Image (cartoon, rainbow, N blue to C red; front, side):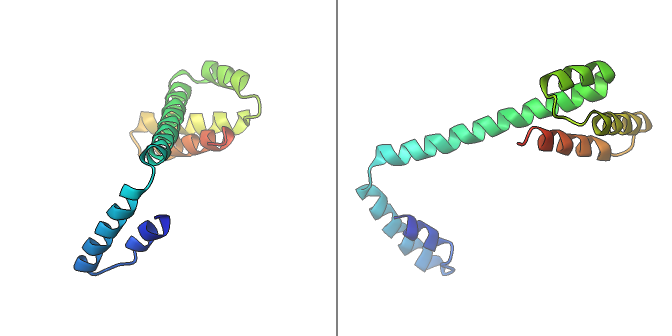
Length: 120
């Protein structure tokens, strides 16, 4: 069944793809639906966890830019392996960009640095 699903992307003809999808449907009807649903649920749960981690990083980034050194101290207490100097430099640059109304280049760099620090 997995091979048939992967093969679908290689079929360019509209009618050929339609017939192949009917074949895939036939194979799926013969499979264990609870197992398939379990795989989809696991994929959904993994995506939900990634979204949660992404939002947590966004909150940290915004908090670091807004609060400055106080937030850096709290971040360093939670994640002691972070590079304080790089973090503070990115925060200062992001604050300066925000004040001057420039595009958030340093803010993006800060987010990337946080993501690498937390290994997400």
